[in-house]
Image (cartoon, rainbow, N blue to C red; front, side, top):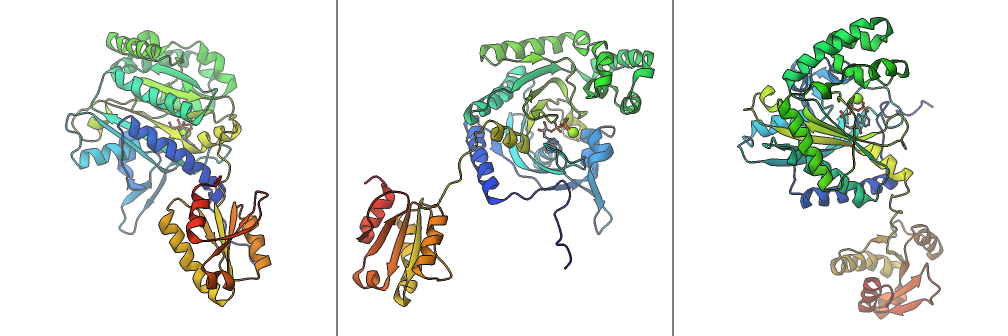
Amino acid sequence: MSKGIQAVRGMKDMLPEETMCWQHVETVMRDLMASYGYQEIRMPLLEKTELFKRSIGEVTDIVEKEMYTFEDRNGESLTLRPEGTASTVRAAIEHGLMQGQSLRFWYMGPMFRHERPQKGRYRQFHQLGVETFGVATPDMDAELIAMTARLWQRLGLRDLELQINSLGTPACRRDYRELLVAYLQQHRARLDEDSLRRLETNPLRILDSKNPEMQDLIEGAPRLMEYLDEESVEHFDRLRTYLDAMDIGYTINTRLVRGLDYYTRTVFEWVTTQLGAQGTVCAGGRFDGLVDQLGGKSMPAAGYALGMERLLALLEEQALLPPAAAADAFLIASGDQAQAQSLRLAEQLRQRLPALRLTVNCGGGSFKTQFKRADKSGARVALLLGDEEVAAGTIGVKYLRADKPQETVSLERVIELLTNPAG
Ligand code: ATP
Ligand code: MG
């Protein structure tokens, strides 16, 4: 026998038990977004490759080596989206949404990056993304951070650390880049292979290196924070004032640079030590140059993206995922008349009790077999329909989890019992 076909490496199925946990988190997120006045936007999973090259930057890890890019049947180069910001900006420009007033969007869905799969790192993963446009002041940055802090609070999460930094303007980053390259050139012999490559293309990313042997060198490097322009310093100070006012604790990490090219001024990450090497759960910042770069009229912007798999892993680690929800009732029927009536009864119940979780036994079987199924389903009660009940217009109720005698009751009484389990 040939081996069955398996899923693509780094791409996971989500089985029902896991899906249920995700739905719980997604519901909390949807409510949170609404409570801050953010609206959902949904974009295609495929975009023109050019979009990501122009936004994320040609010399970033994502564009250099992580994108799923292919030619379609017309020979056009397309890419499975590796992140959502570029698409959001594209969509907002394309539909003329960038009209001056501030915009607040969120999205949720799969992203694709050809990375080495490991815990917390997949080739298809999911992000919750939040993007705002039109506000340059740091109150917006502070609101974005407050939302994430609120999300942790609503989910019950602990032990996430907020790290913030400022990358200044592109101009001061250019000046700083020269200083940094000069410093790194002096210590060229101590650079690893990745860093030597980045020295030419994207030297700031060297600061982000996880290689332990590079840490001393990075520690000694000049700090961008000390070369910021006056306005960026003021922007950063105000952000800190706002965070303080909301009692949101943070640490300043001057080496926080982020992997994408488009960031300006504020960058932030929420990190945890509870997930091993993949400890960044959420990352974001300001990207005032991106809209212009993608052909819109210049418009300040800020946002963040949260890795759903890492968030779910952390919730599991902290035992914060909801228990599996069992059915309320399981309907079993035996006898010709009863079989015919059971689907009808189920529909009556669903009509009257829209929130009821009712499983109907399908595929027949003896009462004994059906009871076993009812028990296995985890349902609180089994509803029984035999030909006798059908003739009498009654329904049997057997309590599967409580020590209560079986009863035979009317439809109205069943509805009462299901509505108010204690009654
Ligand atoms: P990392 O440094 O871990 O590669 P990144 O800087 O590439 O992260 P972003 O592009 O900022 O990540 O994406 C935001 C968040 O999405 C990350 O903080 C992480 O939680 C999640 N994420 C990114 N890549 C993956 C992946 N391959 N698998 C699972 N989650 C991911
Ligand atoms: Mg990455």
